[in-house]
Length: 346
Ligand code: PEP
Ligand code: MN
Picture 1 (tube, helix red, strand yellow):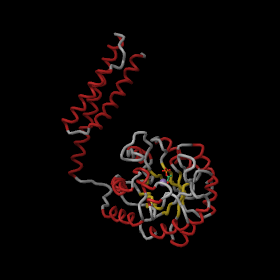
Picture 2: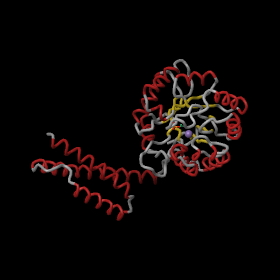
Picture 3: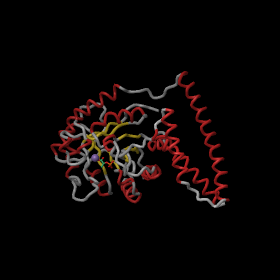
């Protein structure tokens, strides 16, 4: 995978005042890697009554930032009216927010409003981890004639509260990259972490994964921000993060005899693991037939509890991550239930 930073999109979550926009733009325009200055003008907020953005007035501030500090600008659009206003004020690129990507009607309307206009479009992942929906949005813009379509990975909503505001589920952007190898994927550690202390770590990991860029929310006084106060960094902190990322640049493709040898071993283990799983499924089939003939219920709670506990014990013994082994066993169990389903209905 490649690992060069092709995009750094930075700026406040929301444009709040003309001074705040200009001050932030001035500071971050000094960062060489900056490709776009961002600021939300219309904010999709969960609850009504919270700050919903300054609206069209903010577009004039973006224009002023561009003219004064030479930064290209980008903002979120959710309706054809937003698109029209942005085009009128010379916004250089548009992004589609996570709450918009989920809705094909909105995405299509925005894509239609861009017919005949070739402006770069960044598509954030839908709130739900649905790679098909994300791909659908990409296609809608491409079909509208937009040639410069990139995506922004901003993590996925999770009901469980953990370290991250929106867990990254890296396997989802990786799947997208597999489907569209030339697609540029930009990571948004701000919305993934929801925590300014974790931005550097997640940014570095995204770069190590071979992502093409970063979108980092930056505010002159993050604590006083009108939206997403916990996750914004100051321009000075952004400069530090970028220096550290550029220093830790990794190589894109490794091909080394030693690594190739180990990869061959991994391939062998993968193949043996699959053979073992196939063996397990054959036994499950026999058990399912037996259970069916004896009119037993498919799911035997005590048995499943035993299997899980034994696997977790074994995981500990083997030095494997218990949570990983639990997930793996759940996946295997899901397939066992599918096999039962087929046999019981045959
Ligand atoms: C944002 O970028 O400020 C934003 C609202 O993002 P998302 O659509 O990822 O929640
Ligand atoms: Mn935000």
